[in-house]
Length: 72
Image (cartoon, rainbow, N blue to C red):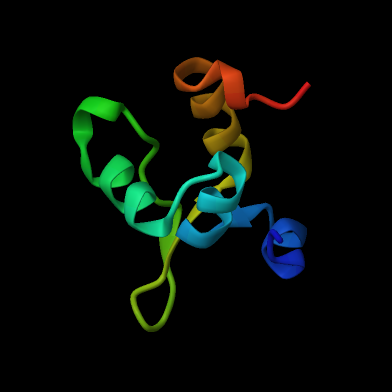
């Protein structure tokens, strides 16, 4: 389940993105680190090295690159 606090702040972690895409976190790490995938840059890096992305940017990427996973 997507972290409620992250949604309230409009930010997602790799775990949230994995849930959204229906893939493992390891796959998300591959996607975000593969510049050919054109994934948005992280919005911020939190203490402990946790990266977060703006939900709107991730959703736009999903619509463009994984339309079968786009929300209705």
